[in-house]
Amino acid sequence: MKTYGLLGYPLGHSFSKGFFTKKFKAEGLSDHEYINFAYSEITEAVKHLRGNPEILGFNITIPHKVNILPYLDSMDPLCSAIQSCNCVKVEKGRWKGFNTDVLGFEYSLNPLLKPAHKNALVFGTGGASKAIVFVLRKLGMEVLQVSRTPGKGVASYEALSADILKTHTVWVNTTPVGLAPDSESVLPLDFNQIGSAHLVYDLIYNPEKSKLLQKAAQMGATIKNGMEMLVIQAEESWKIWKS
Ligand code: NAP
Image (cartoon, rainbow, N blue to C red):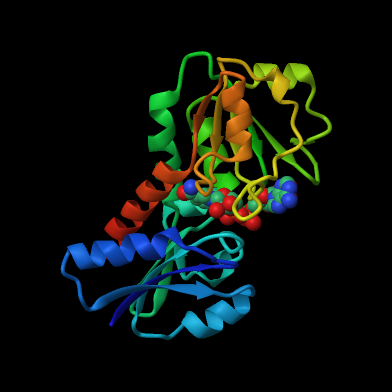
């Protein structure tokens, strides 16, 4: 069997498993499978995945996109620049890391951008946020990251003044806050500062319209969920594994 999969924890309902199972069937690849590797500890995951000759590649999700880095044998330049990995290709037992979240975010964001989108707020400082910040800066935006544990160049939620919230017209949620089954949760933000110039992007796709997106839409913002990004990053992963 040619085995691919998704490493993360908790995995719950996995979009990727369904996506690739359907894809392999449609392409007549009956000797291909895509399974979930649910490990909370990265050391446990590496112990079980390393050296299994059937595993040819895997995606990585919360909370291991950064944890995986010390276990890679090599990284492609983008993965190395961002220091976050969501796709591993296994060749002769060696693990090479890639980041396909970058393309997924960039391609899905691009059609929504307007000249007024010059300043961005990125909520969360985990693995996915690294790809998001990289893309926004590449597009020429000033980016302010927001965290529960602020530090140098990283603001706290409490420090976000009405002026900052108003003038930063791109908001991106890279935290799991609002993800099902906890879909009533929302980040502690003053939504009254949102206007029609705002673009609010939530990496969450389940529920389709998170509480954050519902509140932003009520204020007239353009909203986008993480589904298109997810599909693009999966397609890009497949291109890498096939190449
Ligand atoms: P991660 O590495 O665990 O990072 C998540 C970050 O969110 C944490 O570093 C933390 O930042 C913040 N956070 C966690 N719990 C929070 C809470 N209760 N309140 C406020 N902030 C909290 O996870 P990840 O891999 O970056 O993934 C994050 C989310 O993005 C997940 O929901 C994942 O499913 C989604 N995602 C979607 C796509 C897509 O294609 N649509 C791609 C990648 C990820 P601070 O400690 O700095 O506050």
